[in-house]
Length: 257
Image (cartoon, rainbow, N blue to C red):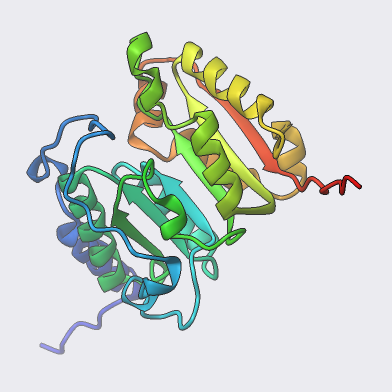
C-alpha cells in the first residue's frame, strides 16, 4: 500500500498538539494569590540597567532592550497576547512570586519551541516596588501595565499598593514622554485610588480610551481588558472593570533668576 501523504491540515494539527503538550499546567505551580512586597524575598537586583544581559532573555534580538513592562505580570496572559501583535517590541514581565514566575518562564519556553512569535517576550522575578530604575534606563519604556493589582483592602495596607506618590516618581523616570500607563481593576475603591494619585502627579495626564483607540492602541486595550487570568475571571462572574490610562508628559523647567 502506498504511503499516505501528510496534508497541511495534519501538519497543523500535529504542531498544535505538540504545543499543547509542551505547555505547563498551572496545577503544578501552586502559589498564594499575593505576596508581601515588604518582605525579604532574597532577590538579587542588578546594580544598574547596563549590568543586565538582555540577550539571555531575548536571544533573537541583539542589543535591544524592553519597551513594554507588565508590573506584576501574573501568569503572563498579557505578555503572551501582546507578543505576536508587536513582534519587533521587546516585552518584559516582572513578577514577585517564585512559582508563578517559573510558570511564565516555562510557558514562554514551550511556545518558543513550537513557534517563532514569542522570541520578544520574557519574565524576571523581581519586586517592582524596589529598585525599578536598576532595571530600566531613564525614559526607556513606552508602556507600563498595572493590571488587576492587589487591592490591599485594609487602610493600614494601602502603603503596599503598587500606585503611590513615591512609586509614581519612579514610573515617570523610566517611562518616556508620550508613553502610556495602563491601569485596570475590578475594585472600585482601588480604581478611585489609582486615578486620584495619577491625576495628582504633574508628569501624568489622563487620556480617554477612545483617544488611545484612535491612535491605534486598540489591540493593547483589548488585551488589557481580557487577556489576564483575573480579567477572564471578572468576565465569568459578570463583574465590572475600571480602566484608567495616563500619558507621560514633559514639563519644561522654569529657570528662576
